Image 1 (cartoon, rainbow, N blue to C red):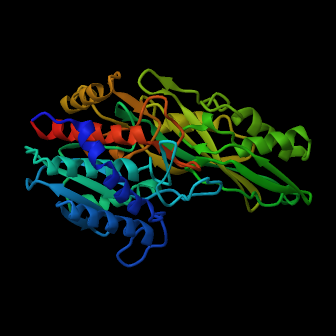
Image 2: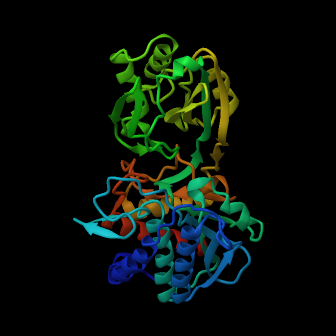
Image 3: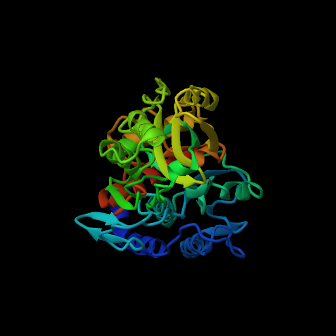
Amino acid sequence: MAIDFKQVIAENKEQFYHDLDQVMRVPSVKGTPAEHAPFGEGPKEALEVVMGLAESYGFKTEIVNDAVGFAQWGEAEEYIGVVGHLDVVPAGEGWSFPPFQLSKQAERFYGRGVLDNKGPIMACLFGLKLLKDLDIPLKKTIRIVFGTDEESGSSDIPLYLSEEKPPIFGFTPDCKYPVVYGERGIVNYEILTSFAATELEMLGEFIGDQARDHVPDELAVTIKGEKLQVTGKRAPSNAPELGKNAITLLAEKITEEKLVSGKLKEYFAWLVTSLAEKHTGEGLGIDFSDADSGKLQVTPYELRKKNNQLALSLAIRYPVSYTEEEVTEALKKHLPAESELNIVRRIKSNHFPKENENVQLLSKVYEDATGLDGTPVTTTGATYARFVPNIVAFGPSFPGQKGIAHNQDEYMDEKDLLLNMEIYMRGILALTER
């Protein structure tokens, strides 16, 4: 049966927008664990809203360990899985639109999660509904799986896999196009540098929105009672070149204005020479790269006082052909005096055979739907593909689209959201018809 995907989607898009808005209105930021809500009330509420929609579409639904839900079409035990997430990062300040609802202006949708990841995973669910409504016979069972802790470490996935088998193949719509077959390794460090107690007395606390998911854009500190403040530009931590890092901007201002002396002066000078606009590790002796995944990436994301120490946190994404140990050993040689290096987070790189027939199938789906090159790629991001066996990342961002998620006024163009739905409908059909 030939399907006019664009027409079917166009005829049903208003219902999709209505349903997506219901999900967007739930502020599903991770919160305090509660009974039957291991990641807080918000993520659990979003999951229940989506399960209600999926039931109304006619799918079998289930919530596993209060952490992950799925909508299923088919009865076979083995299934193709589409795995996305409903939790979102905090909204932050500076929005032009209400962050927790679906807003539209000039053919562009805005709202926290419209790109990462409520919009794309709901496009998968609604696209599957459209296939079901067309009575398209699928030869394999399909599950749309909804996680609730992807943004904070994916601790929801073990709770799912403790009860359910992994998919035989699948994808997560939470990265970029074309098919992503490799994800770089991630390691977060805390560099603790010791000072005499009297040296840090002149410094107040560092105040600003500092978190590992983004480049900090506002930072202030008092020096000898005088407040010093800088404003940069926020960007996702896996795209530091798109932002202006408030930590290094503050260090530059302190250094240029000669506001400190002695060891503190040396420390802030080190911050500037090692990290200011040096996003690929060249200032720290870790400028590694390879043909598959490109250059290493480094993002300083937090600076704070800790007793008689300054604690600097770095997020590093290293190429797939290198190891965490190689990065650590090289970094140790380029630290300030009297510093110790601690690993606070580690995620090994992920690599899926790009020659796999299902990967090639999705590549062709992408090419057929877009006319663009579908050669598989790698990413600096971290997705469920690291934690769920047998899946790869596939969309939703198109080539050239970067640094949109986790920012103020997170957006997705209407045409891109609908094209995603078409690609995912085609992909589901291709993966389930064999």
